[in-house]
Length: 337
Image 1 (tube, rainbow, N blue to C red):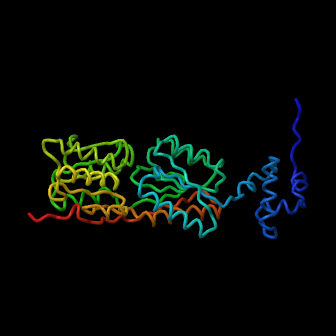
Image 2 (cartoon, helix red, strand yellow; image 1 turned 45 degrees about the vertical axis):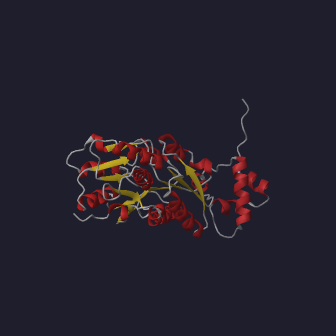
Image 3 (cartoon, rainbow, N blue to C red; image 1 turned 90 degrees about the vertical axis):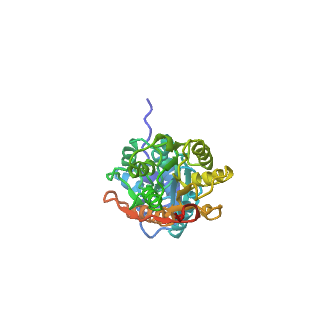
């Protein structure tokens, strides 16, 4: 069997046309070397497959000046706000953003973490939706830092990532509002229960007894799901007097279809969503919604990730929480009795 010649630092210096000391400075990110020369040396190191005896640590610190953002569905209207805010902060720090669409699939979400290095990025921001318990283990094994934006998932506080979430469960604000304005037959319309599960559990916790007839689970958080839910609820012998929509896309579908079916909103049925996307202000009627503080949450997650990349630390993970806000509009104003 032919034994492969071990690549040395001298080989790297010769191929790059520089001195050994310059190679050492490049690997250790030391001053006194131009960015162009450093990049040339790092390219040679990668091409030759050079791994110094004591360099595992040195090679780990090579930075691409790129971060990845993994989102569940780029078609969802609240995602652009998140992506735009991440990009703005990244750009201020000299970073670019690589976007991944996981389609809310557990395998794609886990793969986006497992294969981070192949993307040539320095870290990841992820909005997980449909993942198994294995998420914690996969994050723990990642050699790159991760920030998690958590909306409506039950996450173990021991997860080895910086975590940005909401201080108050957003669904509770919806239910408290509907109960406060006197609605007594409240329905829920959302995607499968295990996707953004806390939004459904807020509904479950807020009613004395869950009537299965007042719960509609569609395939996803889309306008189409909202339309299907509207048709379903209007077909009941006793219609609900309010509907809590799992997100604004569903709420928009509900309002459009209920209106088409001749249902008066909010007189007959009040509707409230979550995300507070711009579209809620241009529907007729305008839709009440809970703001999930997308801009603030995205900025915080990005700042935490870039700080960890810069400081090259693990452990002492940050837990940042923002307070969601209920925005009451025409679709759920209190009616005079």
